[in-house]
Image 1 (tube, rainbow, N blue to C red):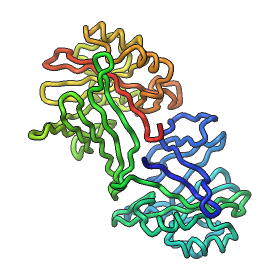
Image 2 (image 1 turned 30 degrees about the horizontal axis):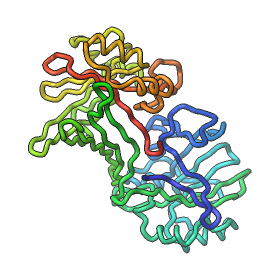
Image 3 (image 1 turned 135 degrees about the horizontal axis):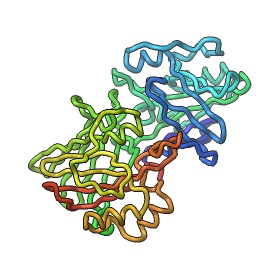
Image 4 (image 1 turned 120 degrees about the vertical axis):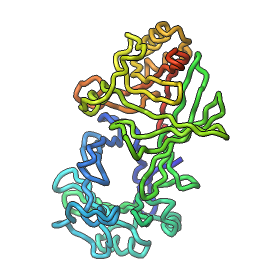
Length: 373
């Protein structure tokens, strides 16, 4: 399983990152990354909340140029920059006196020179030195030329260098990082399909989700759309049964687009038989004569109401319904401001109704977890 570890003081673990711990600030959560608009920074569009402190990240002109050949921004000026660093990633700033300066680690000799320059302990052991010789296993970034970037950082406290860090982003044997796992349940708790979302960490950073249908034996692989992209669901599902291939396309609803992104385009699927107990229909998928309508499942009562309306079996058993009511975090697709309360704190759980030739035939509940859960 993929994880990121920062090392200090000859191999001591400084911290382990949990990127998918949730989108809403929780003072009890040690590391909580909050997404920001992509325009904030092309490489690091997020900020970190850590025990009441907020850190904001800014990448350098050199890093942006190295990543995709499209320069923007500026380089670090006014900071104590070690001349042995060949590429500065950028900074993570709490305030003007407390910040981290991130850089590319080229090899162990350079890392020792950096430690000497700042009079700080060398951060890694011989074990991490060996990993540094095989950069793809621990690199955080690759650029358009498939070159790896291994991350290091100098932490400044009150404008003085206080800590030298080395980051290992461990991947699986295939160089892929599993970031999300999921399954769908139907007919009282039977697993209908399950799979995982992984990042290849290739230059184009394509996300792949492979799903196995436990009933039909089909496999599903998601791929990004290149044409007619939906503003929220920019992907298709490629379904293969071993001999034939078919495509499932996805579309977000106008209601969901408005709530999440303030768009006013789209369809609210009013030509379909919509259960009146559902407050928010999220989207739909279409594959040949089958349409699946997805909605925000607020609690187990809503599941019962939907099942009754369509005269279909509930998708899960009483134990799972109790879990949904007590801890919807276990099922959520994302944390979003879906109820328009002003913060992205609602764990949005997804359920769906499948229609075949306009007749409701299946009711599903989706359970989605992160790699660290």
